[in-house]
Length: 434
Image (cartoon, rainbow, N blue to C red):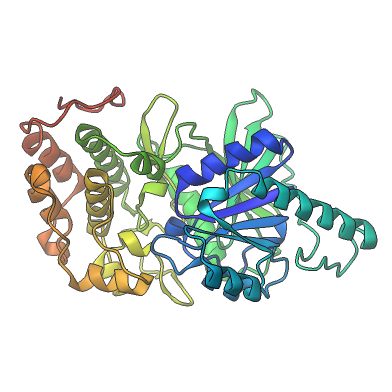
């Protein structure tokens, strides 16, 4: 069985995946971070999954019930279990009315009920499959949708697919291994037969071109890229240490946050030096290797600084509401200082454990980025306030001028502060201030 979990906590999703693996060894779990990725595009491949575990509370995104109502009529939408923090009878009734197969309290996830529900759904899916044939043309299996798309065939013997680990609006991401030495890699694949418009294909080609042009230890490594008649793909390094969002959820000491911020600035310095703006800098796109070193990743909406092509979606400017700069939110031309603003949001989150702006809707968050001053840091963190003020200025002209200047500020202003001792060692090559 293939299960998709949609939640705003990477740590919680990982705990659920590990718990299910102990009782359902054949289950394959994919995780979708709603807070970072937003609502899926209309091209999202729901039919890759046999069941969906959907949380009601999704951080800055609309509630899970809204997602269920919006997507339930799409082809291939899987049987859904809505998960909520409380035992809300009214919400449970609304969920079932909207098409959910079941409702669970978050506290009950790690008990016996979830595995039992999933086993029942797997049996029902198998019965339907046997009744009509898994690959019949036009096959529909009462909520499980069309037959699952096969694994891509890239005409490339250099990689062996292992499993799907995620998907976005127009691409899928697989864990694979290199055929020659068995080393793990990440394959980002776009299916050219999915009716993609020219803009999406240009974005994918641009990402491959940008990544291939940058060689720096603070930026994700690209091993291979290519185009076939059916697919485009990028083979990138696999990060065994996970992403920064997971570390934020676990909590970070102030010295660890400063070390991390210095590395992020170093990565931005590398891409800006090559004339590249990331435009979607956020914790989920900041990855860690097994040795603890950090790299910037996911350049899907990046562009060259002097590039005039404006890549936007049908619904507005691309970017993540929680981390978007005011000028990007307004749809005006941006330069490298938009990345510095996003870095400031991340720095605030690293220091405090929460983002500076929260609202009931993404539009409300974007409004605050444009019009509202961020809340000041707690008194114990006041020494970092000058850096944040220079990063989170609404007008780009009032911000720090470069990532190198940010590195200098971190080196000069913050080491003198007697922060509590950090836990663990900082990545190699990163200054220590404790």
